[in-house]
Every structure is written in structure tokens, then in C-alpha cells.
Length: 164
Image (tube, rainbow, N blue to C red; front, side):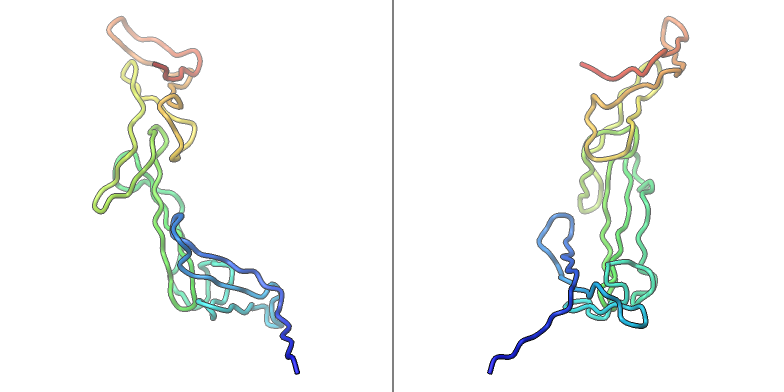
């Protein structure tokens, strides 16, 4: 006699650490039970949220953060927190702040890789967004900026992008 198993429709998540091999897999029923909770299978089998959310569940104080200045000029960091059962896994991500270009690299005791946009007339350039994909040509001084050099004070009438 053959036995058949009916498996529930499930969502499976593979949690990885910044592009490295998966550190855990969670499968969750897509249909919540009558009390509104969902069931998880595998590592994190008792995670009340099943979607990696940090609120509630068995992981108190397991919360992600938004991007903030990292304490080192030119860098921002954020924490992504993920409840896996009763364990909170936190991953810290870094990027170059607005006005800096390059790719943030987290070394053991320091950050590296971001360079401040050049200055002109005593005013540093900026970038449209923070991130790790900016190059020096993304640096610009916004139109309307007043600057000063050896010949006097002047105003940029349009955005002025860096070029070599």
C-alpha cells in the first residue's frame, strides 16, 4: 500500500547573509489557521509571523532599523532583524551617505570605500541619493548654490556635474 501525503500550500523563504549561502530555510503555510497565526516548518518552526517580520512572536526586541549615519563620516548603516523561532538574527548593512561615492566595505574594525564628492568654491558636491552604486560623475553642485573663490562670490545657475 502506498501512502499519500497532502502538503499545504506553503511559502518558503531562504534567508541568506548578504549574498552568501543560505543560513536557514523557513516554509510557512500560506493560509493562516483559524486564530490568524501561521505555521512554519524547518528552522524557525515556531516563528509567529512566518514572513521574517520582526514584530511580536518569540523574539522580543528583534527590530530592524532605517538607514542612519553610522558614526563614521560618509557612511550609513541599517540593521535588518529576522525572527527565526526564538532567535533573532541581525544583519548590518552599510552604504555611502549622500554626497559620497563608492562602495562601503565593512572591515573588521572600520569602514572603507566611500569618498567625499569634490568641492568647488568652498562647497562640496552632493549626489541625488545615498548608496553603493554612485561614481564620481554622480557628484554635482546644485543650481542656486552660492560659492566663493579668489575672484569673488558666484552662483551656480544649474546643476553642475563633475567631469574630468
